[in-house]
Image 1: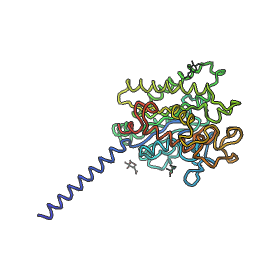
Image 2: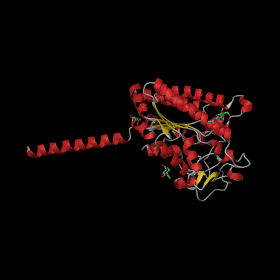
Image 3: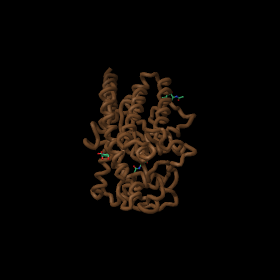
Image 4: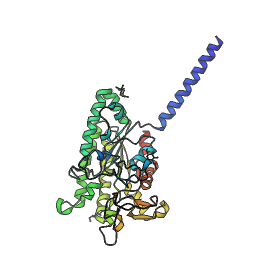
Length: 360
Ligand SMILES: *[C@@H]1O[C@H](CO)[C@@H](O)[C@H](O)[C@H]1NC(C)=O
Ligand SMILES: *[C@@H]1O[C@H](CO)[C@@H](O)[C@H](O)[C@H]1NC(C)=O
Ligand SMILES: *[C@@H]1O[C@H](CO)[C@@H](O)[C@H](O)[C@H]1NC(C)=O
């Protein structure tokens, strides 16, 4: 009798302890997975699988600081912003969608999170067509994922999982680079407006396919990346490109605000990459940078005349450079940005940060 009662007590205490551990774990990471859409700033290897794409990074010196010096297809010396976003949110960085093997347990792979981002992609289908998965193509792939999950788990369980997951977006820079007033006949204002209205349809489609938590990474001061500076004799930032980027960010953040008030259960976090990077550019020393203009890897003026390919030269002090190649940040700059997006405060990230979005 006595030993049995004791046994019962021990069991009850262990059960309570287990509940406490589970509850605590749940409170820390409420989003079960991340789904990523975007361009080369977020691509973790999809383009490796696109045979005819010229927009690849699966060769040296890319990945020189990745474990094993591996060139994974990331446009970086190491990890990219999305890897750090996932890591800081306590989630695995999701694998490239195109890397999921046909013999894998797809239901399980799809539940763990997926990255659809593809170097070169834009909100417009015409942006770098044939070299990447456009944003619409990424959404089509996600739509088939949604269908599979709903079939395998039932709609309720699939929708429950997706509604708690984080949907990350890093898109728009390539459309801005593609702006050509002679070809489009649109003013920068009209062009940015056209990007935002395209985006509106795309985000609504994703909402209709179960997405609820939108983490939107705005476009940066991309007129200040080495490739754009190199177009000016004095290595100045390209004002038209930066202007377009600002207008697109303004339009996107008000779009998100509007979607939040019209769609039930929609929540978002907008990261102002533009202002965040401008702070670094204007005050490099306080962020540990000594070079914020030239690329680390490349050739010619600003290391911007050639992409980062095996022939290119590269810097040894990669923690001191803001740009890895003519278009993309170094791993250290990506980590800095992600840390602000996850744990920062308004006005750099609003109305809530990514950690708060995850906890909803
Ligand atoms: C980059 O990601 C890999 C794989 O997750 C990890 O092993 C490595 O530590 C990361 N590097 C940094 C600097 O965080
Ligand atoms: C695949 O994964 C799902 C979700 O974890 C699981 O329910 C299912 O039993 C797995 N199927 C196989 C064939 O292992
Ligand atoms: C962008 O350029 C337009 C037209 O030159 C100007 O009216 C507008 O104020 C600029 N916007 C920003 C954010 O710099």
